[in-house]
Amino acid sequence: MSGTRCLYNYNRTALYRVFVSPFEKVEALARRSALAHPASRTLPPVLSPPMQSFARHAALIHRPRKPSSSATPEPKAAQRLPADVLIRDRQILIAGEDSKLTGPHNTSRVLQSLDLDTQSLRMVSRAPPNPTGDQPQYAICRIVDKRLEKEREKEQEKARKETARRLARIKELELNWAIASHDLGHKMKQMKGFLEKGYKVEVIFAKKRGSRMATRDEAEALVKAVRDVVAEVRGAKEWKAADGQPPKVMKLYLDAPPSAKAPSKSSAVNSESSEPLEN
Image: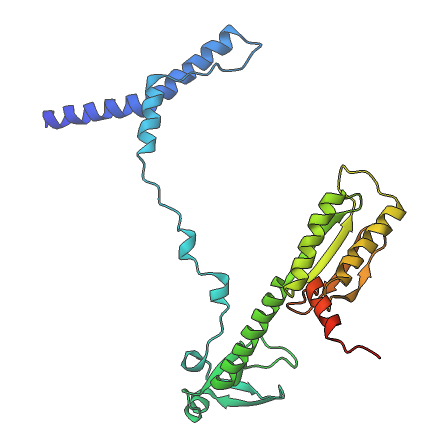
């Protein structure tokens, strides 16, 4: 029994030194500071080795971890509506092609009447928890033809790709109203190249930051120069009315058929020589 008491007393003394003694020392220092400086009640910062030991022991205390965000379902996944055998409602309303509701129908009987290889029962609206007034008491479902659905999806994908392709066929050129002549020549060469390849070109005229303000005459002359270059490309035209007026922000909408290259001088000469001579 004496050995047990000694061990108990030793453990008790060790715990007292680690957890209780540091606070007693801080309290004693606080009393001394208050007595020595009654006007000032600010306690000087003290971090004794026992306090460091206390912090080290406190860090070893087990704390349960918070559940990770990946464990929570995504809101979109939670809002997905069931289909076919995953519909647990005993009775449902069915929306027809004209969106008129019929029912209630027994869900299992509806599923038995369908060919699930070519048809699918899709829930479009859950049953409200507390229906009121004209609100339907049952979930609303729709019978979907899988073949028609695939065709519709293909058409939508084709339209999406066509829109993306059309947007990719538009080129933009920005011209400063006070553009230098050599820069204008480079831009016009680019514009002709785009039009000859069948791209739509949007020419945007605007004042570049830090550049001088062009006069109205200069701005109108620049627009005329661009239109003169457009006229050199076979079939090129403004497919939409211009936006804005010079010398403010202005935009030209240009278009030309593919391979709309301007006729070369040699071809023009050959065409003239091939014409019959009048007597």
